[in-house]
Amino acid sequence: MIKKWYTSKTIWVNAIATIIAIYEAKTGQSIADPSIQLAILGTINFILRILTKDQITW
Image 1 (cartoon, rainbow, N blue to C red):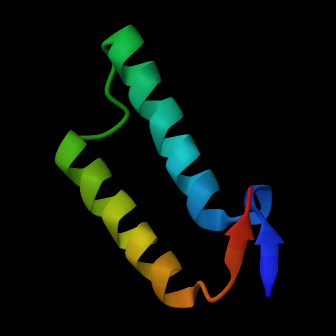
Image 2 (cartoon, rainbow, N blue to C red; image 1 turned 180 degrees about the vertical axis):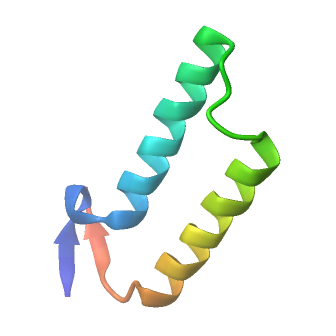
């Protein structure tokens, strides 16, 4: 099955992570320790990769 890019959980997770990184860079405030953030993002991406079966279209 092919789905639209905006229905991809992986894209949304990474978009949110990018927004958080920009926020932290601009404000100098850290939401969580960077190594914890990286571990969480990596784990979420790993899980989503296992669960993802569909292609996306742009």
